[in-house]
Length: 81
Image (cartoon, rainbow, N blue to C red; front, side, top):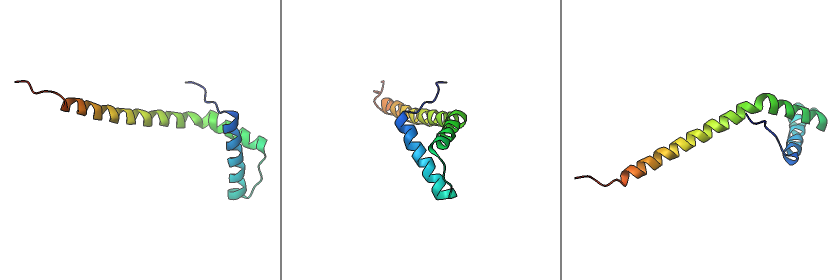
């Protein structure tokens, strides 16, 4: 599996959101360095689960669309006499 990577901007946005969450929900101040380590943990330890779920969801959608396309193609068939 390809290693999950975040852009610098994505990580910066996530750090801000984690810090905000800790302040709002836990009344705790977490530093940017700690928030970044937490994000790295989630990406490395849990990211694969979310990635795999995304692949599964995409595969399900693709299968549904292919079924629709197959049905549409069958409707175009000409009757044979």
